[in-house]
Image (cartoon, rainbow, N blue to C red; front, side):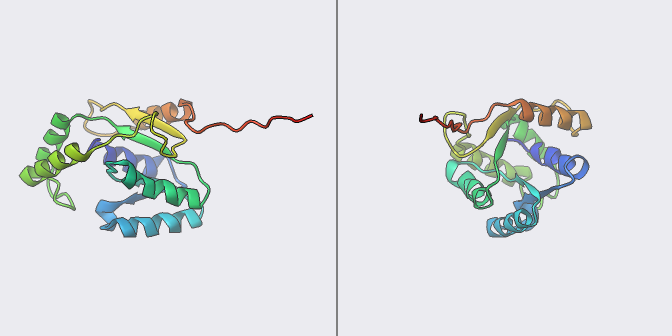
Length: 169
């Protein structure tokens, strides 16, 4: 979980991932609208980054299910900032589109922490790859940071079972 996540995703999509589209509930205002945009972008053959805090398996299942409709793989990045770091970032920021700042933001963070069930390589949610991304000490996302994250994702092993064809002779 990380508030830094949005900066990484926005910057990566804008600078590195030209054939990608970002789906973010803060911008699109509802999960249903995010689902509609994801389907539209997949239909138009874009790759998608779902930039959203999906705190449990049932929330993540929505996005995996839509990807499966279009037969595209799903990779999952988990930004692992701790509660204290997230709280400090919430206190520092101003005018978040959904009010996640100040004392109200800390209340939202507390509820999120209580309900959070992180994805793991032990829970089969349909992800091809799962990468845990440690927080950066830098307040802004750099090109080097994006390159490192994308390289680590590329090197991550697949979580999906492989199908082997047994020859019957």
